[in-house]
Image (cartoon, rainbow, N blue to C red; front, side, top):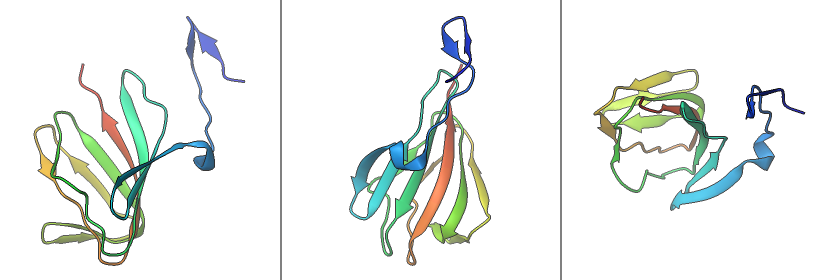
Length: 110
């Protein structure tokens, strides 16, 4: 049971297998976690050779941590253990040759 404060949960627990699954594009699957007024978080799984289907534009900050595999951003390659932060106004189109799994957070504007 989650603790409550003024009708809002102070803690939420979700097992990865219970997260909503959404196919983003060929070989790209997202598991969405709870959204709040402050942020949203997600786990993205890329199959080998997959690419994000469109250029991803960021009106607010976005961060991700590479758990497995390798993510390619332009000419840069980010392997396991890499933490990537995109500033508001940035854009990118991640892809992979090997497959990858990333855990990320999008910080919502105020």
